[in-house]
Amino acid sequence: MSRIPLIAGNWKMYKTGPEAVETGAHLASLSSDVSDVEIMIAPTHLSLALVSHALKGTRVKTGAQNLFHEDEGAFTGEVSAKMIKSAGAEYAIIGHSERRQYFQETDQSVCKKVQAAVAGGLKPILCIGETETQRDQGKTFFILDKQVSDGLKASGPGDLEDLVLAYEPVWAIGTGRTASVEQVEEVHRHLRSKISTLFSNELADRTRILYGGSVKPDNVSDLMSIEDVDGALVGGASLDADQFIKIINFNK
Ligand code: PGA
Image (cartoon, rainbow, N blue to C red; front, side):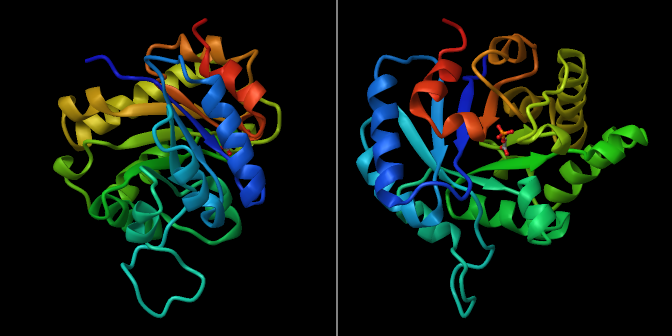
């Protein structure tokens, strides 16, 4: 099965509404002739509706950086899948390492969020990744397996047709250090076989597995040439449309 590459930008806590709309519109004009690559940006919750509205009918889709698992209720400060969907988003990033590290997210809360995203009609991008210490201790595969199986525990294969996995080694995020081609190759192959064991060959075949962690215009083609890499989740280098378009055009 051929998987359409997904190049996704995670804008984290950067850009006001007008700044996000301006960068989004610039990216849309730069990407108007891009084909065979899906493009997504995830601005803050506050800018999501504005950006989604401004980008309607363009090649650039939008996603949220997080969500809360309940539909609605007395949960001050939280946003549901239904609200994100109605703001015009198609994707939701779930369990990013910064959420796990600074906001106490666990595999259990991530699991609920994946379920809520799917129930709310959003495509989940489940982020997983080991810390440097875990890698040094030889625990990489143990940690990744746990994050995948616990994060997807409550879902059946029928729920996960649009699942995207993002392998982001914590030590490579925002550090300028990228995992080597051999490290990425080994992990992505392992993750696909994990999905196959947990669910089915068919689901493993269709699941896109993105790499994230210091992806830049000058390393993206090497990463994208790896067989089981189906796209990239890009932080810093997605904030500038002129940089990000070079990543999107990795095969040109
Ligand atoms: P980075 O961030 O590209 O700035 O390393 C990646 C991410 O956090 O998704």
